[in-house]
Length: 224
Image (cartoon, rainbow, N blue to C red; front, side):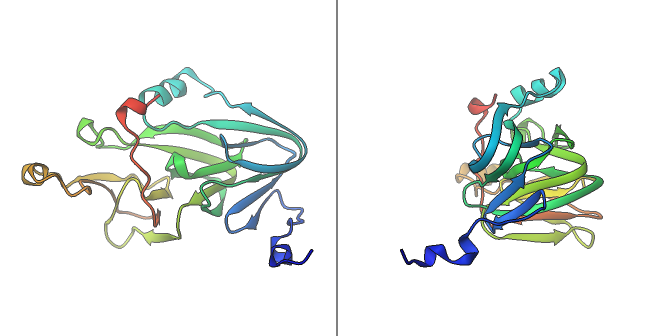
C-alpha cells in the first residue's frame, strides 16, 4: 500500500528519552518510574501498562477539589512500555523543572513525573464576584507536559503588566502571583456585558503562556 500517511515523520518515534514528542500534538512517555496524567489523555500504548485513579493524597487537597472548579482528575500510569498522550489536538510542550515550580490551568496539564508534587491554590483577590479563580501548582525536579490549544505566546511580565483572560492562560512562573482586574461596571452589565469582565494581571520577574483559544468557563453547578 502506498500513501503519504506512511511518511517517515508519522512513524513511531524510537528514543531512549523518558519524555519525548511523537509529533507536535502527541507525547510519548517511556515507563519505568510512574507518570501522572490527565484522565482520558492516553491515546495508545505498547507493553504491559496499568492505569489507576490517582487519589488526592490528603483531605485538604480533596476538599480543595470539591469546593473549587479546579477539577484536577489524574490517573497513575505504571508498568513497562511506552504510553502516548494527547488532548484536544493541543500542541504539546515539555517543561523541565529543576527544584522549581510552575502554575497551570488544570485543563492544559497533560502529564508529569510522579515524583513531582502538586496542589491547588486560590488566586489572590479572586473573590465571589469573580466566581473564585484557582490554579494548579506543580513543583520539584522532573518533567511536566502541557497541551496548548492553538499556538501559544509567551509574555515577559517583568517590563509591564500583562492582562490575560483566565480561560486562555496556560501556565506561568510559580513565583509570579497574578492579580485580578475587574472591568465590570453597572453600565456594561445593563447592556449585557462585554464577556471580558475579569482578567489576570501579571507583573514582575517571570513569564505567562497564553494560548490562542478560550476554554469554556466551568459553571458553579458543575464543580466537584
